[in-house]
Image 1 (tube, rainbow, N blue to C red):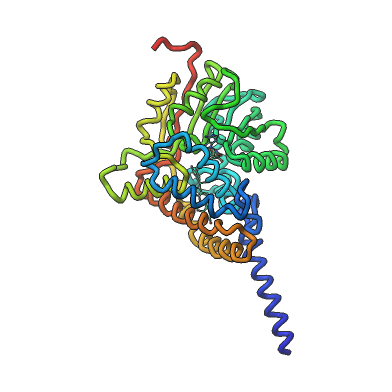
Image 2: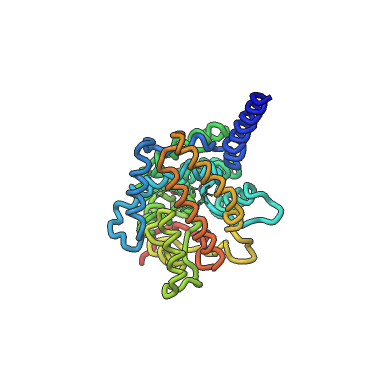
Amino acid sequence: MDSLALVCTGALLAGGLYWFVCILGPAEQKGKRAVDLSGGSISAEKVQDNYKQYWSFFRRPKEIETAEKVPDFVDTFYNLVTDIYEWGWGQSFHFSPSVPGKSHRDATRLHEEMAVDLIDVKPGERILDVGCGVGGPMRAIAAHSRANVVGITINEYQVNRARLHNKKAGLDSLCEVVCGNFLEMPFPDNSFDGAYSIEATCHAPKLEEVYAEIFRVLKPGSLYVSYEWVTTDKYRASDPQHVEIIQGIERGDALPGLRSYADIAETARKVGFEVVKEKDLAKPPAQPWWTRLKMGRIAYWRNHILVTILAALGIAPKGTVDVHEMLFKTADHLTQGGETGIFSPMHMVLCRKPESPSNS
Ligand SMILES: C=C(CC[C@@H](C)[C@H]1CC[C@H]2C3=CC[C@H]4[C@H](C)[C@@H](O)CC[C@]4(C)[C@H]3CC[C@]12C)C(C)C
Ligand SMILES: C[S@@+](CC[C@H](N)C(=O)[O-])C[C@H]1O[C@@H](n2cnc3c(N)ncnc32)[C@H](O)[C@@H]1O
């Protein structure tokens, strides 16, 4: 009898552990499982050191004077977080307004499709995804528009993930992924019929540099849309609580300093674009974008326990626990940024490259 009870308890525990890790663990879109968490292109034993280096660089973003080092640290950041993002969020690394009656997945897709609808692309045209992540938006946009999408990301691990997902989705004939720096893109002048960036150019130390590069590769007359991370008109640099929230967002998201909403269109014009439209997509009547993040808190606790167990067992790299803790805190800062209204991750700017160069 005793040994039967022991076997039953063992089976229950094993079943429970399997359920905790494999059923609860996977992301909504089943991109990754908890047991497969890695440090991207960083070998498991170097994850903790790389995290420490990342943290000492981005701890006080406003004091960063070495702008040229930012892309390397952003690359490190994405080695550290890509698997966790896919596992806990899905293949689209951005926010979107909640849509009543629709799932997060549908709301995400609608936000992505809006970007390509705005740049008015025809099937077969060639468009650029600036900072493409693992390609969630790229696949939705290619399927919706039938345009050929070329994505660029600085992170090689993401390139491999994106190519794998493109193939699995049967979209590899429409979607191409290139590893490179969006500040010096390996594309000829005037070579794209349109471009978009979704929550990616916020990683550029100088917005002017990435906008100028996008301007260069676009064909005259074509459109570019960006969803930018900004501080809004409600942000007060004199309010210590505002400063704490914004610095928390910068530290946990590899940002060399958040820009004000007022700088976006001005920078686009500075590099030669005509600004066709500008709108903060987070403002009412849009529903809060941070609801999903806030609702996930219980799941994040469970994830943290899971990551801690997996790291202790040597299944996940040791530093994963630190990275997960950082993301946990970032989720709170982002939620506070949304609730106070001082931060928006979707300040939309739609720009056109003029047909002929302006004289100014
Ligand atoms: C555009 C950027 C990324 C935006 C978001 C996709 C990510 C910002 C914060 C991330 C997360 C925070 C909490 C994590 C949680 C603790 C973990 O258990 C599961 C993953 C998270 C939910 C993770 C998912 C992605 C984010 C929401 C930036 C970097 C410019
Ligand atoms: C938050 S993710 C967004 C990814 C994608 N747009 C999405 O919504 O899923 C930001 C992306 O920008 C890329 N990125 C950041 N800095 C870059 C740089 N200097 N050159 C190229 N890509 C960069 C990152 O590698 C990452 O893929």
